Amino acid sequence: MDETLVPQSSLALQFLPKFERLNTGGRPPRSLVAVESPWRVPCGAVVAELPSLGRLEASRWKQDSDFGGRRVSHNDQDRYIIGIQLASISVEFRNAGRIVADGRLAPGATHFSRPGELAAVEVKSPCDVLHLYVPREASTRYYAEISDGKEINEDHIPGNEIFYDRTLEQLGRLIVATQNERESAGDLYLESLSLAIFARLFPMRGAQQGQNVPRWRLQRAMDYIEANLAESIGISDIASSVGLTRMHFARQFREATGHTLHSYLQERRLEQAQHLLRKSEMSILDVALNSGFSSHAHFATVFKKKLGATPNDWRRKLLFGT
Image (cartoon, rainbow, N blue to C red; front, side, top):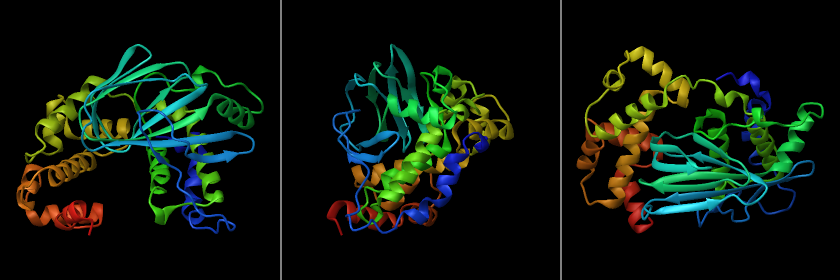
């Protein structure tokens, strides 16, 4: 994806780590994100109150269990709702009268709902979604500032479809990190992060690039991965399942999702392993084998590198809080 289209977000990302721990001027640091319940209803967690733009709200909808059932949301406020998937999800999602997604989505999958649109979701797997609530007036003001007073129009806003944007996903993860008390943030960090999000969202010209993989092909590849998650499959196997060569499909997959096939496959295996550790009494070895890892040692190494704890320690903390 061509980052030169939206340089403001890249610039903000460069300095965000420096801002994160700046003194808050005597005010207590705060988290940006509230736990969302019900679905797509903001909980009053304001990312930032920008003098010239207004407020940006964020909430996180995370379901590890009891994720079944259909949920409906009517965006009856004059705002946009941006949903960013922080983990892989199996879902049927409808918006504005059409099916937008029906199947497996990779982390980073993003959707943009306009004011007045009705949405419905049926989640079929554990999920972790960040929702951003952006007033239409804020987007109008922002676009006017960066375009010498021009008005924003429909061409500057993503259509009613799923798209992948790696930078927006990273910004979303920075917001979610503030739920952790150690990562709570001061006003300067919040302002910088908010401006980076606005820069990436309006106009989202880069969101339509890299989408030259037919949706059915991307879906078939993800379905193949799900059906063979516990097997020793490789990139060649996945590419063959959609009728393409290894190199050809690997490039297309990365362009479309921002993830390599290898990183996506490993992410799904780790998510499967976490689910089994949480919901079953399997031994660590059985969890490893049922998640597609070749050995206990390999599983433990990858798990600790990604999650900061061994599988056994992770399960113990989950069960006993120690």
